[in-house]
Image 1 (cartoon, rainbow, N blue to C red):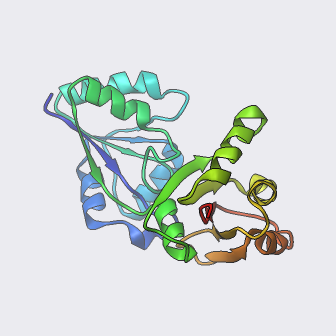
Image 2: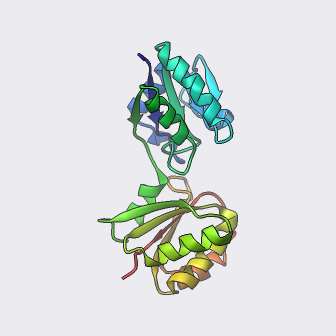
Length: 226
């Protein structure tokens, strides 16, 4: 199998954050697979990149499209995978695609780029020596309560993603489980024009969040248990 799948990190907000290697890889690709082809086409147009083939590989079709990617690699094509923003696979599609290519004996490499998890961690002011990534919490039910209990006992710094319409609910539940004095940082729209970070004890940060209408992307960074 002479082709190669490259996972390319794309900007999480600021278009200037793309690496030169990422641009070259995108420009040289025979096929670009994207979580959302409309968003990716706008991104590529901004860099004056016009791929021979742009195809959708998202959560609902990833398994089937993985078989096509394996065939393209067997034909010697250079295939790139990008998600809507940041690094693929991390709380985004791509895991099944990577597993299928590796299972078929194909080559996978990464052109690193920005990601919201480490960016928020760096801005949080919380301990960074040992940390863990929890992604998105389950939306409801027993699975959510179990995850919250695990987070409450975790001694490492914890990084979570959350959607704007669930942000206040999640921070409220975290305050109830972890206690209102646990240090937290909530980052919003990282690398964008109106980037903002709320820092302090959960109870105080929650009071600040109650005064805004959450919009955009949020990352929650929690201090670990003592």
